[in-house]
Structure formats: structure tokens, C-alpha cells
Length: 240
Image (tube, rainbow, N blue to C red; front, side):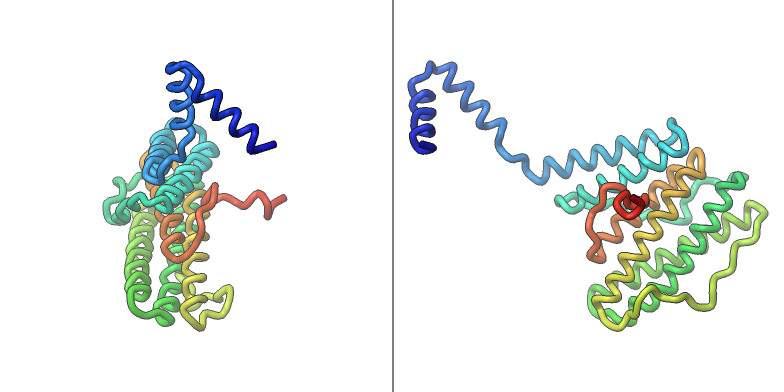
């Protein structure tokens, strides 16, 4: 029956007028799969659109938009787009007097960066080759972010919280696989810290926190993580 139906459909198209056949061909063409490059461009455009709206919305909505932007950036990279260059911690906006909420978020970010510096020291010891080179690059990046945050907090007239002498790892890191898993976890946690920073900040510091959220989400991919719909936000399934 299915074969007869398909044959009848083919005969109807062949016997149709030229305009009808053209319409059928156009419909078939429009149903063709979209290439990865087009999909990547659309995700990149979504990431940019969400990022440009951060300063015009409420703090809670800004946090959500920053997360959506980071998720779109992840999907764009998976589809083949080039990841944006890493931000330069020394090029942050001129320091302003932060609110109590923003200062608290800066201290939280400093604590997370301190933990990342420690963690990447452990990670690098278990890796070799290009993976070890990537760990070294990320170690230097997090150390630079730590120093920039410490300087910013000091400039605001507050005392940066001290780093711990050592940190309790969430699991044993004894080989390359567990090292990559720890790197993914560290970046996922950093994304959450910077998402909270987006909500706490206003103006340029809000945009900078969103940039760091996106960067952490993309670094998690480089260590084997998978894209998520809302990087930096709690998983609805786990909070249900």
C-alpha cells in the first residue's frame, strides 16, 4: 500500500502543470536540512543578541540572558564556529565603587578563581602533550583573573578574602580522565559564580561578568563537557 501511494504521488507530480511541479520542487528544497555553518551562525547571532540586551533589563533577566548567550555560544562552537578570544583580565572597566551585592559577588569570584588555580595545578600534573599545554594556559588565565579581582576589591576599599592553603578535591585525580573531569567541573562552577555576578552588577561590570560566564562555559567544552541550555544556572531537573 505504501508503494502504491508513493507511486500515485509521483504520478500526480509528473502529470501536474509546470507551475505545480515548480511549487513541489520549491517545497522539497525548503525542507532540505540546514548546514552546520548556517546553524552555527544563527547560534552566534543569538549569543550576541542576548549579550547586547544585558544592560537594559532587570538583574534577574540579565542573568538569564547571559546564560542563554553562553549556551548559544557553546552550541555555535560545537557546530564549527570559532570560539571568541579569551578576555584580558587587565582590560576591565575603570573601577567604580561597587554595591554591597556586587562586592560580595567579586569576593565569590575571587574564591572560585583561587580554587581554579589550585585545581589546575593538580590537573596539569596528570596530563601530557597538548592537554598539559591547555592546562598551563588555563592555569595562567585563572591566576590573572584572581590577581585582577584582588586588585579590584582592594581598590574598592575592601580586603580580598585569603585563599585556602589547600582545597578538598571532589574526587581523586589520579589520571588524565579524572583530570579532565575536574577541569570541566571547575569551569562549570565558575560559570555559576559569574552568572550570579551578572545579577549583582550593573553597567560595564555586568557585561564583564557575562563575558566570563560565557568563557567558562566554552572552556568546559574544551575539557570534554557537553553544551547545556543554561550554563551557570541550576539544573531544573536537580532542583525539582
